Length: 640
Image 1 (cartoon, rainbow, N blue to C red):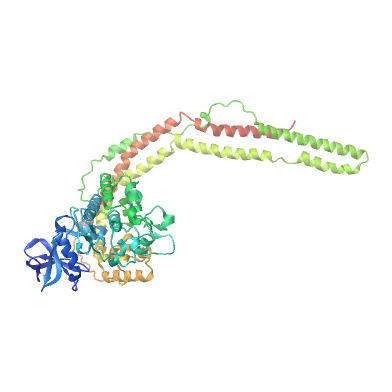
Image 2 (cartoon, rainbow, N blue to C red; image 1 turned 90 degrees about the horizontal axis):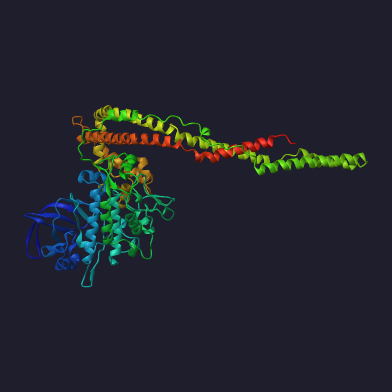
């Protein structure tokens, strides 16, 4: 294909670099510095005023983050496209957000790399705004990323540009990246603002840092299952700590806001929170995101259990270990060579065995200070006095009744009834003392348990048994590795099938009734390829009922029918490396536990011996028990 530029240059187009909804991008033969975008269906003329202004203002010279138009391209005098700087050795951002694609297209990318890319995107949008440009349609398909993390924004001709008071609007936008105040509106009638861009940028940053998870795709607490666009409009940020307001939970096993620095988490809450009146004002600007992401870069540490994992130091545990354990997949590829361990198991075992047990704790009662002779409490004395008074009163009333009857007053017989009640009636207060005894005995038993645990050998022996089990598991690692490698041969067909299914990405598939929004929801729940599809997992995604699940299952079956097993293909080296990496991770974890176990046993022994020197914390429980025993003996004594 041959075209011309407005300057009269003749262009011969080469192979295709990329395709989009609006046009196709081509190489230019004989010129490796530029590329050409050719519009589909005569869409060039309506864009001519914006293209001319962007070119006249020489935007292509004013930033390296965007591939702005350089010259208008014509065919037979008609505007059909434009030339732009060629972005070499870069791939679409969405490939970095899809785990399976990232591992193949960006194999060296770890969380440090992702943070670097996020920072570069925030910087690019910040610089664009300083030029009077608002991206408008800011989404994960609108940027290219190199293997070094260099970011270039594309589709510059669709961006909104303000030149000399004339606004050339952005007329398109994906609902999943559109702020709530613009949801459902005709975008070709809207002047986009920096605040609108701030929402789309926040979504992209969240997707990068949270491995492709959309911030508004989660598990609803109510029966209502909103689409991502509906959740955005309602401010239902799935990762918000204010779940009583959003009525949403993040998908299970995913990283959460507590896994990133507090100020960064608060920025996401500002970006996605329900602020209907001034949402665009409250959202962090690109200029605000830049220092937050720089701070994140400074606080990334390496996981002690998996050298492929990097995460923020304020996270309670490695979020990627949690994710991998929950979903059974590998998130990041480790390129570290597995070196021979210098760990000396025999030395560690001898150290563990050399730490003698503190033995059982001495009897707690023998540790109590002498308490002398206890006297009954005044409350118990009062009970005894009341009892004596009642019985004396009963005797007196009975004597009066008998006296009166002897003197011919028969009605006095009835005085014997209250006399009997007074003399034989039961007291309720002694029951209080019995209850006190039960409570004192429970408190003393709890004191004994605490004493034996803290000052005895129970906790020490339990930890030693766990460490001995780890020692046995460590000795079995070579056998386990041989078994796992042998299993690869037995499972060769299954492994080939898995690799086949993983090569079919849902994001690039045409599946009836499953568009970009639903594909984002699936991705947010860890379903990215044909391999990830099973009925239970899909049905757990909000909005996916039997019909849509059936369509996905049908697509998976159609992909599986294309598979052909080849027994002559050797075991994939990547699968072998995965086994050895898993063994290495287990070995590192066990070595760390055993070395830490030596210190723990020594500490537990020292603490137990120290505890035995001071039992004063249990004296109160002991005194209470002895006091109530004295009170009960006093009450049981015969009345005088």
